[in-house]
Amino acid sequence: MEPDPRGIERLGAEIARAHDALLDGRSAAERAASRRRLVAAATEPSRPTRTTARVATAALAAAAAVAAVVWWIRPAAEPTAGPAPAPPAAERWLAAPADAPLEVTLPDETRLSLAASGRVRLAGPAAEAQRIVLEAGALRAKMPAGTGRRWRVAAGPFEVWVTGTEFTVAWDPAAERFSIELHEGAVRVLGPLLADGRELTAGQTLRVYGRERLELIERSAAREPPAGPAPVAPPAAPPAPAGPSPAAPVAPEPSAGPAPEAPVEPTAPVPAPPPVVRPPAAPGWEELALARRYPEALAAARGVGLDRLCASLSASSLSRLADVARYAREADDATRLLDCLRRRFPGTPAAAEAAFTYGRVVADVRGNALAATAWFELYLQESPDGPLAREALGRLLEMYDRLGNAPAARRAAERYLRRFPDGAHAALARRLAEP
Image 1: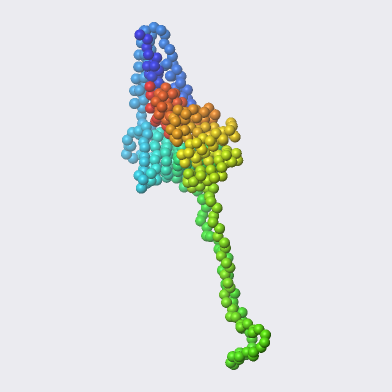
Image 2: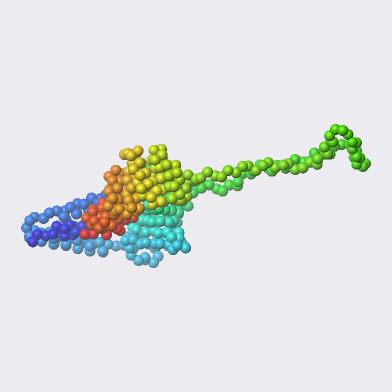
């Protein structure tokens, strides 16, 4: 009976995973190359003899057992002062209650304060740094300097590189809004609209709104408001005319002409009439979108005319308007705007990102997982190293898992783990990659 090649492949994969653990000190590229060589060697077709097949299978099983023993007896990395913490799990989820923050102190004295309703995932140590994944909400973190430990804080498509510092980072996945305020130290932020990354120092705040615009705010010392103009006193009453005062009032002589006007006492100046107050103009769709009033924003855009906006808006504004329609759960308007963007700006990064957004619309609004896979794959074809590659691969995992397509899910999981072994979807990818 011939050996089952799938069994040999599974054994080869187990050896490769153990082998990866022994190569922690090497770079990610070296580990990946070594793993490919090992899996290739383990899964190479055997000779068509039963004896050779049995020997190969036994050798693979023995090698996997040895690798597993070596993995489990490895010493723990980086002991910390104080009581020894429990062995770290692969990941640890933290969720703050809806009405109070959650305070956590890690063994290295890193302090985390998660705002109410926030969610984070401690992804465990990677080869190059400790990782925290902010799923939603706001997180204030204080990492002690001088420990030599590096941190990576991921929030959606953004990543913050940290050594020792204190900062507050926030991520709203629905609005795709990211912000970070640096209180002490320095960090480097990578993600959409940031090209090769942005260095931030204490006192700076960075805000990114979707893929449309970003703001960098410098904190300055509070200043006294400038003094306004001195108040103007009302004009004084004119002086009384010189001369003796009459001893008694004298009745005027009657005359044929008009009677002279009686003297008028000076009075305070008459105030100017109040300015005419006109009702404010109705807010436009962009203003309503910034206020997260998405159905109203879409209604305002329809009032202008979607065809007119499709023909006149820039690529970034079209992308923002498509997001407004997506948040309002109006799939037809969203896909119409995305089709327009890809037609007017073919071959651009904005067109590729429109394919990713199209996948989100058909997956999250229409519930069509099969159609969504085609759009996520299209984004990866048009922008394989783009800023949303990690998110696109992660969504592919979700869609194939939802469809029950195990072979496609396994292939996508292996792609994800090769490129993003510590990404937000790494746990799902490891589960789907299992034979």
